[in-house]
Image 1 (tube, rainbow over the protein chains, first blue to last red):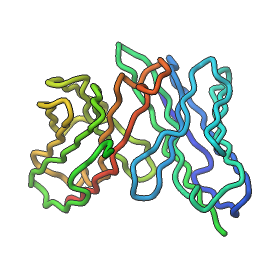
Image 2: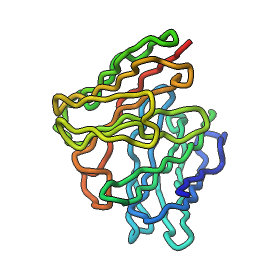
Image 3: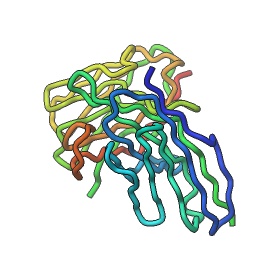
Amino acid sequence: KNQVEQSPQSLIILEGKNCTLQCNYTVSPFSNLRWYKQDTGRGPVSLTIMTFSENTKSNGRYTATLDADTKQSSLHITASQLSDSASYICVVSSSTGGYNKLIFGAGTRLAVHP
Amino acid sequence: NAGVTQTPKFRVLKTGQSMTLLCAQDMNHEYMYWYRQDPGMGLRLIHYSVGEGTTAKGEVPDGYNVSRLKKQNFLLGLESAAPSQTSVYFCASSYRPAGPTLSSGNTIYFGEGSWLTVV
């Protein structure tokens, strides 16, 4: 069964600290992996997209890594800011039958405190 | 530059009532999607459309109908609302299918969400 599991479920850190969010997936066949940021009460916004051949992708203070062999991805946030408080969603795309299905993780809720 | 716009943002329905959620995008995208988001779960695809006049079922289509009469609009209908349909609904669009090719057109843009409560 295609699944995307994220950990931790929730995380609290102090402003200025770094943190890493994890994503493990059992999706086949694999097309690409995306990270989204979802602010409370808003829609998800794309942070990064990585294909099978990419190991890392950065977007400002956000750096995503992908290990396709172990089927793991991480999202590292550097020098956190209060505005980083949000849910971070890992999404894996699987290409089957001509349609690219997206499998969403449940998200990690990050709270950055001053 | 509105992107993806959903209306209404909030709605309370009684069991058995019907309603329509409207999604509009101004990016000339071919592909549009309706998802629902429930606590502790990832977004799940209800229906999608690969172009004007086309619709297809996603993974949780029961109890919903959709129409794509115009390229920029994708409507989600609930014919007879049930408490199990209490959820947050997100519309999304992309220029090309959310597939393996890397390009700016591969990005999926989401609306702000519509909070629906069925009592």
